[in-house]
Length: 396
Image (cartoon, one colour):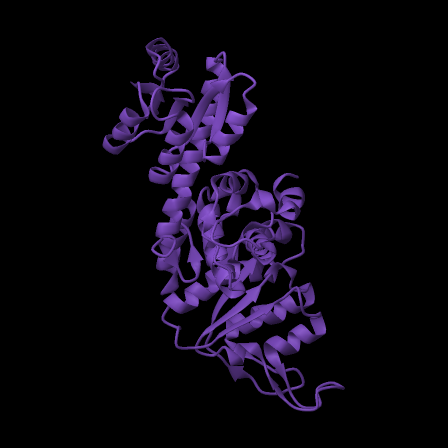
């Protein structure tokens, strides 16, 4: 859609010239010869920006700017002032003007300023929209997203949740793979049973075996009492094996046998114990490549890779970045007892420009750090004022 600009100037020659020059560049303009006419036009019609001269008969441009900022805060105002009149320019900015340009007027410079104002206005509208819909946005469990990749993921999870087949979740670190697993538990028919999770990369091989299968008293030096393994603890529910690609090769055949037989034998024990669990595994690794390289058993891969689920990275989710930032902002502001009203358009632009290699986990961490450092209340959250974020994250 073509942007609509309101031009305010009491000199007909200047007003008509601006309408003609901007019109040639694809911007529709309406010219008014006084501030009073301009305010009346703003009540009747929606404009994307206002360009006003400073010196006019009757109400001056600075006062008009103040009225527009008070009544139409989402409409950026560009003030045209005489060359070298810095005091007037400063007064305009204090009155809430988006920017100023000087006479003699350079139409190309004005056009560039207007396009920047349009972009900022669009981002402000997007941020306001996100604030309105953040609680109503379609979600699945604790996951939030309105982008096409997330809508496709939610649709897949709806179909997968009621099954008992094994699920393999693949996604980069920080994309929320455990949230997917918990959502499958919450939405599925095993939601009355337990959800038991373990990170296979965080536990040494010797301890991982006893964690999964349990052990009898005296099975090894420190086994002073028997321990029930996670397979049995998760009976009737879901066992989530995070980072299964890091499962030690020596332990993989034992896991395969347990999944095939649906029984486990505790370390040091002589009896098999039956279990009834749905296995959900997750990894950031390319398991098919690991199978080819001999780092992961092919038979185990096919046992767990029944229903594959891919979680998209944050950089592929478009404006979900702003949606999540708004959610995290509200969450951490409440925790910190701070009233932060939202994200400015300039901050939103930086959030969208960054590629977030750490995905949702990285975004959440940075918003938490930012809120913790934020001392000003009752105004939009301004990332530019937090130099640690700008220097270390958004501008690198």
